[in-house]
Every structure is written in C-alpha cells, then in structure tokens.
Image 1: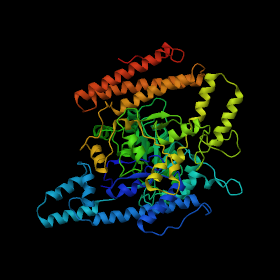
Image 2: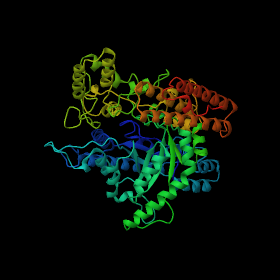
Image 3: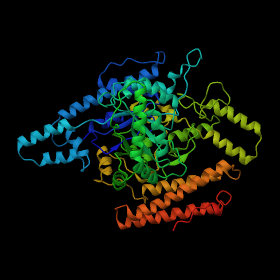
Length: 612
C-alpha cells in the first residue's frame, strides 16, 4: 500500500508543476518539480513563506553557492508544507467533504485502500467503524515530492571577475547538490540522456546509497526512450554502487516539452522488450552493483532492490491506462498534458488556459523554437510566440536573455550565448546578409534564426502571472508545451474530475475522433520521417541513408506488432478493434507510399516484405 495511486504527474515545463506537490501530495499523488530556474524557485519560496507565515531570508546571487542553496531551501519548505497538510488531513474527521474523505474518494476502485474505505463506510457498528478508521489513518501516505534535472541543461557559471567557476557550480551539478542537501525522502528524475559528469557527481552524496536495510532515501529515476539506453545508463550507475529505482519510459514524440525521437522504435514494442527482458535487466545490474559496492567496501545485497517500470506519453483513457499497466506489467503511468487544464494542480495563466481549452483541433505542434535544437511541442498562438513575432516585425528579433540556462553557442562570442537571444540573432542575421544567397535559401535561413524562443524564461511565466511574483509582470509572455494529447481535452477540470477520468469514473474527452495512443504515436513518427526526408534531400550521405532505412524498418516491424496486438491481445470491444485496425491500415498505406516515393533512399530491393 506504499503507492496509493497508479499514476504520477510528470514534470511539466519549468513553472507549471513547480508547486504541484503542495497541491496534490497530501492526497497521495506523486509529482515532479523542475530544478531549471533557481530565480523562479527563490520567488516561489518567498511567496510560500509569506503565505505560511514563515520568515523569509533571501538567498541572493551574492551568496556563495546560491543556486544550490535556493533549491535546498525551497524543497525543504515544500516538504514542511506537505507534512503539515498531511498531518491535518490525517487528523480530519471521516465525513462528507473532509480532506481525509477526499483522499479516499480520489483513489481507484481497485485500490486496496479504497476497498477498505468502502468497507468502513458500510459498517454500522460504531466500534468496528472506529477501528477501521484508525487502521485507514495508519495506512495512508503522502505522494512523493520528486524533482527533475534535464541533463542537457548544464551550462558553466562564471565568477564576477569573468573566470569560469569549478565544474561543481555548473547548472546541473549545483541543482543536484541542492536536492541532495534537502530533507526530502523522494527521487530525482534524470531526463534527456546521459551526462557523465553529472552521474559521477551523484557518488558524492550518501542519501543516494542504500543503507543496511536496503532503503534508499533519495532514489534515482531515469526517463528513457528504449530498453537499450536504460540498460546502458543503469550500468553507469551500477558501476558506481548506485541503484536505479525506476525506468520511466516516455514516448519519443507523443509527449509534452522536448521530443527526443527514436529511430522509429514505437512505444508498444519498446514496452514489450521491457516486459520480456526485465529479469535480465535486474540480474545484470545487480551483479555489477554488488561488485562495485565491494570495491567501495560497502555491504552487498543478496536480493536486488526493487525496480519500477512506468510509462508516459499520450495515455488518454482509462482503457489505455489499464491495458499498458496490466499487459506490460508496469508499476504505474504518467499523466501530464491533461493536467494543464486543472488549475488546482498546475500553474497556467488564464489567457493560456483558455487557449489550451479551446475546442479546435491541432492545439499542439512540433516546432523548432527550442534553442537546444531539439523538436519542441508548442502552442501556436501562445503569448510567447506572439511576442516573438512582434519583436521580429518591429525590427528587433530575439529575446532579452534574462536567465541564460540554455546558452550553448560560441560562434561569435567566447562565452556561450543563447540562439534565442537578441545578441545572437543580430549577429547571425548580419552574417546572413553577407552571404548574398538566393531569395528562397535566404528566407529559409532567416526563418531558422528568428524562430527560436526564450523558453527557459517563458516556461515559467504562467506561475509568475498567476501569483504576481515580482514587478513588471506585463513583460512576461507564456510559452507552453503540451503534448498532442491536448487536442482531445477541451474543458477546464477539477482535480476530482481529472482523477475520475483517469480511473474511468468520468469522461473528459471532447468530441474529436481520438485514435488509440499507439496509433497517434505511429502517425507522428511517419510524419516525422517524411519531414526529415524532405529536409535532408536531395543530398544524402551513406550514414543518413542507413539511418532512414533503419527508421523505416523499425516502423514496419512496429506495424506488424500492432496488428497482432490489436487482433489477439486487447480485450476492448469489437468496434474498438475494427477502428484500431482500420487506422493501422491507413497508416501502413501512408508509410508504404512514402517509401515508394523515395526510391533513392528505399530501393525496392531494400524494402521489408509488404505486410499482409
């Protein structure tokens, strides 16, 4: 009964889930805070100190190690708030509308806690009822206050004299230190791939190591896109005597925020591989883990620690949620994008909330606005995008670089700058003018330069506007990064509404036809392949051709896998299977047309057998 709910709320943007634990942890729901923006984190600490009556002592940029200290102080504050909330909930009466009653009402009907709660409600003997209530109070637990570090965001930092600070003061390492020094008993989620320097730094903090009883105070969660990368990263930590407690499998494209596409590997086959090779993963890592602990003169363990495998990205119905958990033997699922429509849970300013809830289709698209150069899910008429266009039309493209967390470019400067910054875009456009390109090529390069947006600042604008943090809030413009699933949700909801939707007690989907989550992802991958081909043709090298053929092969194998899955494994209605198989056939035809129309990349002899 340690996991009251079968779902968690993943990290969303920079500010959308920055205080979500304060809103949901008392009900047993786990969520994730982004550690990107320490300036926003410090503003949130000031806000909540005032709200709770705690003394607020600023941690300024003049303080040594201020980034880590800000993070530690905020996380400890969140922990204190949640512990107080939970104690009050636990002490409340079992009556209609009380906090403890809401805790149980939110639970799935299949939850052992919910079953026991319903038994308590049905009992008429007062002493028996009291005994069951006492038992229920002892069994409940709060949700975890987890945190996220996007490993690619690891800029170096500089002292006042301009010299580069030691490596441990980089953004990612300082954020890790801030979490490690906090009082939290939770987990850190590493996303966006491997950062060896960051992973090595984890070794410095005792809370990440298992104690004599096998308990780990601060667990490691990896957000991964496939089994191979999970095994690779798991080995990196195991060789340090550290255990990865959860592999959080996320769809490469059917997700919010940055999209890290696989080479055509689809969610279903990826989860199938985890299901079939889980024991191999555990046994391989346990041996490496124990060998490393011996070298560190730490105690070894006869049995491996628990490993959770969860999935997220595009799940939108209780049938999908139940299927992926039961068929693939998962410990849970992540529901992110739909919670952007739940003001009780996430921080979305009213203007953006209204746009997200609009009934029109295609509310989300895969854009190139991120300075990281990674495809980014975007809302086309967000205030951030509108402001970016206004600046461009006024002759001042680019954004003031307020925070600098995404700086990486050194084309024109010794210190890295951001490709969304006004400084970079002026320099790059000046260079473009000197090239004297033909009009079409000039337009294409111009658009590629000016489309970058200041997402490290604008992804935190929603909470700034909602809570009126600081001054000049009229200068804040919200970027929002919903996954494609937002196209099927069109109403602002309460926490109870959304949890009821997840557990099948209510339907919040709009009237648009919604294909199965696996079909939505397959369509995205075919579109991605088409766009990638167009971008790289007509000049392709051998390596690119090999990549595209591997991509195509993985998609064809995925289609064959889904045909068998829909035919024989799913227990939904006949109508569902017919719709799923029809959608699958249409997508197969689309892929085969794409293959046939690109014979230089996919010659007939290189085609996989056509699927019957």
